[in-house]
Image 1: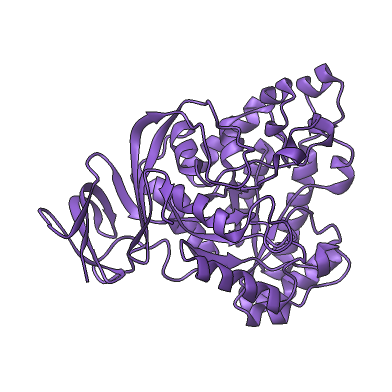
Image 2: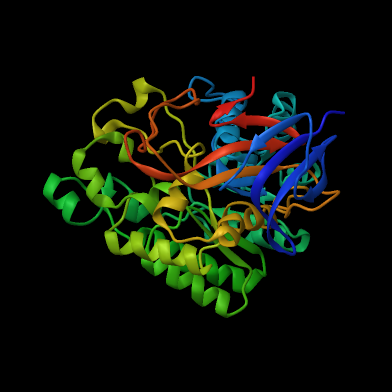
Length: 422
């Protein structure tokens, strides 16, 4: 087998940071040290080398909505963004609420072969919130993370049943924590911008009341609980308090909630419309601090592709969601102060741990799997294109800092300088 050398990078190993080369052979890391030579070399001078990124929250739209995205195009976007694994949300058609759909998603991801694709199972049948999905089938199919993402599990009693079942097995509840009653009819954050535009707003309490309720259910059941797309300062406080009690609670923040606040919505460009909505500047700053100090565990992209004919309509009629996979690492690097260790923890190590994913999020070591990313934190650039099927990105034209140089999955280069392998 030919050797691939990642040369002259700053390597984050379990023993610490080393200025070294990495030799990759036959899908594994064969050597870490200076002056290595091989058949193919990627110049990594000035760049960080660490575990491939892991996204706990992506929408690949397959099956059923392939005109927006499919597992192949989503995998390309993920690889371009430095990811070697992504968890695919279950709001597909049909929903991933039974074992055969979960197996299809995983097998299609393996067939494409650019990243590891992990299916997230629905908590309720059809994500309708009325009765539990086939949790036993999903568990047997290898699903370990469960969510009705796109909708909150509104019925606390039903959610408690799911928590009781999964607590016994060690599964994770991943909650779309937005109250239906408080958010119904709202189009953006309830604040000065919504007042200026005369649009119905969604108060921050819509997120906070669900999160507070669910934390109480975690106390009752002991279930592992992960809150998606945290958007409020109060939410950060609730997570901190739950962790102080020793509860098995984790949280994610999206790149767009790190980058923007509700003033972006003043443009009424639907590219800034998402759920939960962009909140106040104070909320955004609290999220940044929470990610930096570890209260917020991970960056989850909530990569949500929509076709142009769906998104390029008046704000009130546009669906929620933006792209994120290709720029998540760059946005986190631009808008927070994460050093190399914290960067890889929030984008690789912690999401793999929360998702109970073997072979991913592992510090480079000899004999370990060659699932790696090379990221230069100092390159300044402005995104203008995407490899996704959709183009609803809020980052086009936005100056950013940091860029993925190369992605390596199972020892193979799956993306180089933002261009995924064919």
